[in-house]
Picture 1: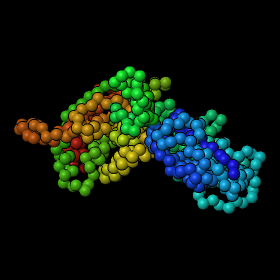
Picture 2: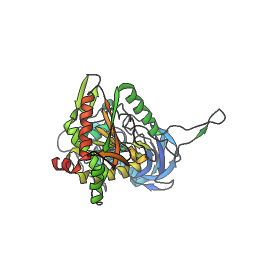
Picture 3: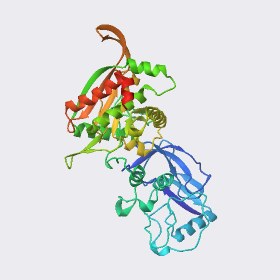
Picture 4: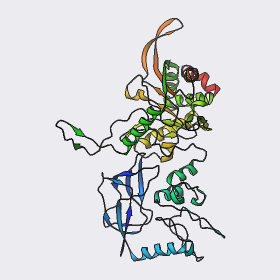
Length: 431
């Protein structure tokens, strides 16, 4: 039986390593092509790695919790003779469906028919005439294309030698959604708590211990450092009377939550001030406004703080926004938000009030140009029509890139959102 070793593939986005969260197979198990064999944690999320080989698992080259560099051995599979023969037949067929390497050579093509496989291949069978054979190294890239119905022959490669990278497929999936800069780690908000489960190694000095950064923390370090280094940010804040919004929510407990209403008002404010739904191109000295609003929602999970985006938030109702926010929050806390969701954000909404704090001077999620945050809602004395009353008050803080706008635009956006919160019924009627 021929033994084949599968090395940790390039997972895209310039990542160089990943941590094995758990194995989904054990030594001695039989696996088929494209079967998930392990969950690995990257700087973005936890993803399942599929096997490019069929056969019996001979060796798992690392234990759960181990961090591997791209290219290091992951698993060795002993191909059973029928499976190995079938795999060789697929290579000879010249279908372009080979999972490892750059596909088949131009001289190995044939017109004979093959029995269809149980799983649908990511690339449709070529029609008559010459076809470009897509170059794909990572099976994760092929799986991503298959699950989203993307024909790899239509994807424009940006990798060395014409190799299709994960980012290329994600751009094809996103369509008009803005793509994250390939040199930038996934957007992360303000700060992230040190993640649990990291291996702690003793320091040389007494009374100290050292915790290596995992993928999330390394990404946070790079993103936050770049944001603070490159963006001349400014912060403004205002206290907002959220009593009427609170009462609206209480009157319909089964309806959208407070964050869904606030998200709807933020989207309306971004339509009014589109320069805040943008990025700054420093090389060309241009402000690049996006056509759609992908609203990032800051979510604290076990592995750190990430910001998945509600893609196409500008086309959603309040109810739909609430449903999508709940779904994103749940998947992000489990570490299973998709790479597209974690990289497509154009503006960030941060509800740090859930941590019991009133205000924050958050760090902008590069390459975005602004972030809006809300503190906890408290009963406070408030003057209404000349009378001191107890009202539901929250503090709203807004951090913006001073290169794209001045204080007047920032204040106008904040007042647009604050006025909608203070008079939600009339705001919703205008939306």
